[in-house]
Length: 187
Length: 187
DNA sequence: CTGTTCATGTAAGAAGTTACATGATTTG
DNA sequence: CAAATCATGTAACTTCTTACATGAACAG
Image 1 (spheres, each protein chain N blue to C red):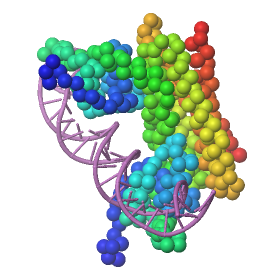
Image 2 (image 1 turned 135 degrees about the vertical axis):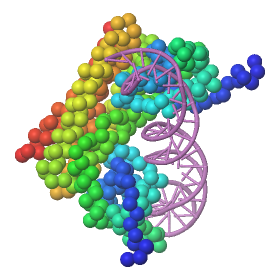
Image 3 (image 1 turned 90 degrees about the horizontal axis):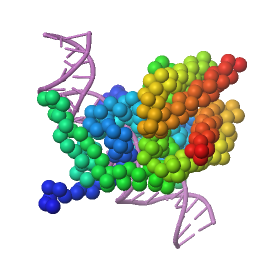
Image 4 (image 1 turned 90 degrees about the vertical axis):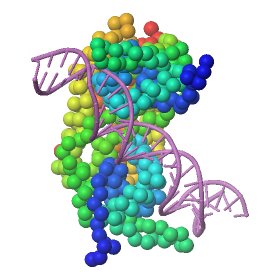
């Protein structure tokens, strides 16, 4: 093997595993991966085309995926498949024993944290906005995402639907919590 | 007024409001702001010294805060105060009617999404790790953060404690949800 | 008198986003 | 046949992080 087949080592980050995972679910082109994330992982791991394409190229150069031409009519397209090493890397990540500490970044909660600066009326309005945001998120998960995930779940992957349910149930919980807070602010 | 007092306009982002909000809570130096975020907003808006100092300087140049010397012995220190414009900007942000859509980024949920690639045993182990992460987060919020927030809450700010309770209750919910899932995986 | 905390700041780099650029195909 | 979608990629920029650099004060 010449240098054309040489393998460049790379550091795998969560975005790399997002792509490996999508390939494992049978999504094969960069464009299709972005589409899939828009309707599924968007709520807990959004991404963009400008992140997907270079990442696929890097995974290809490090031998974790293999690209082939897959034109559709006169329109060129690349199809990617995981290699044995790619599958091994995905499973190794999924099995790695220490989870990174949970830390999400949310402007809404930051606002709530500083809500003492507002009048009672405005405090209530803020809580109402946060509550309807949680309600909207839950509604989207139940109406759009969960049905798609459940359609896969016959003999296929179960976890997309499980994650959608976890999300929907959690946002329902938050919504009720904020509704109680809103009521308390009345008194 | 000469150019020395000229005001540079700046775009305010959530990290700017984090600082304005902390100043409003009475935290006055850059170092102290970072300390405060480490024990409070860390779970929903982490930050670093290298983000805080330049942001304070920018807020000063745009007239939203005012710096003064506040040395402690032979050790120099800057104390910052909000200006009228700074207070107005904070309140305007808190009152702004459209909340940005909720999207958090979490590697743990991403793993769960792809958990079909694992054996039953490994699936269960992953769920257990995620559950204990939620339990640890809840425990930290209840044991370390909530007491500090409640200490403020006499006649001072109420919302730090409210946010800590919302977080702790939500992670308790997630924990129970994952415990049920773990049990289902037994059968 | 040593290690930790207080205190401020910069430099370099990582990670991801929006906007730009291009062109084929499909749908109404 | 026009608009939307499929498809790939780059450039410029934003935001944030870790590491570096420096030094005073305090605690055991």
